[in-house]
Amino acid sequence: MLGAGHGRDALHFAREGFTVHATDLSATGLEQLRDAARAQGVDQQVTIATHDVRDPILLPDMSLDAVFAHMLLCMALSTKEIHALVGEVRRVLRPGGHFVYTVRHTGDAHYGAGTAHGDDIYEHGGFAVHFFRC
Image 1: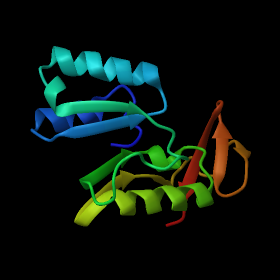
Image 2: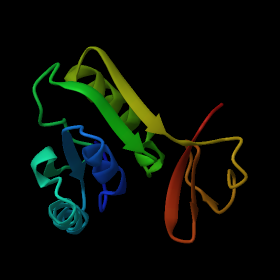
Image 3: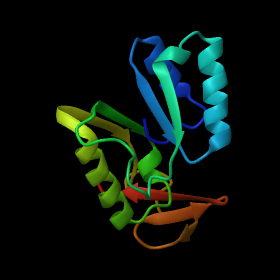
């Protein structure tokens, strides 16, 4: 799981019986995830690692059945960085694996609001969002 944050989605998948390798840039969020996994009795199904998605994924080729990323691709990543990340996801997925992700798009009501940074990235309230073209 890319961009696991404090673990809401990771914990859901673990409770459903999946083995979860959760990564995030925030060590604090991952500590919260680890504590919650222990409290919910799913700590054996969850591993965590601090990771910047602009760097290569530190897993072997074809080592995962699925990768999940909720709104991570909407972060202030350039299109080039997103392409590199998707290439890394492709590398670590086994044949027939799935990449499940959610994104904001140019049809979203907030598209165009705030300060434009180019590459369909807009900053509003101190938070930059990359919007995808429909």
